[in-house]
Amino acid sequence: MNAENPQSPPVASVPLYQLKAEFFKTLGHPVRIRVLELLSTRDHAVAEMLPEVGVEPANLSQQLAVLRRAKLVHARREGSTVVYTLASGEVADLLRVARSILGSLITDQAGLLADLRAADNNA
Image 1: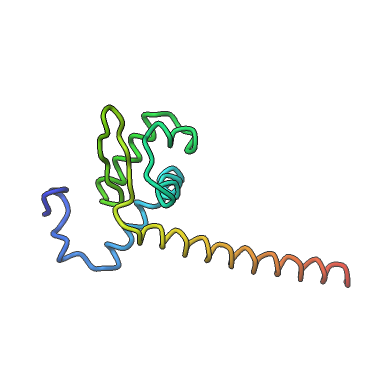
Image 2 (image 1 turned 90 degrees about the horizontal axis):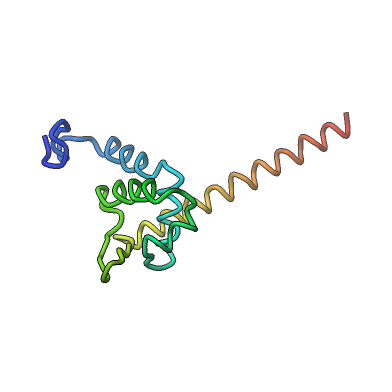
């Protein structure tokens, strides 16, 4: 059991593929992805993120807590303002790679759609 979650086994005994799956589950929420995208450009105060993310403050707070627990973001207090930053530039790199993969998939699908339409017109 580890200190953060007494129900889970020590990290050393968890297979890497399982740790990766947990990591991607953490990323598997649109609000968390949007927050990470925003933080990829610069640090943001919570109040700045709210209109960009489009959720209630309590929901944003919840999602930020998930990202903090996963150690993907860091928070710092500047007076009464809480400012968030990415824990690692590699998170921004991961988002760029995901965007590139999605762009390729969409391009491939658009090509397939064009081929199907051309086949329908020739039939």
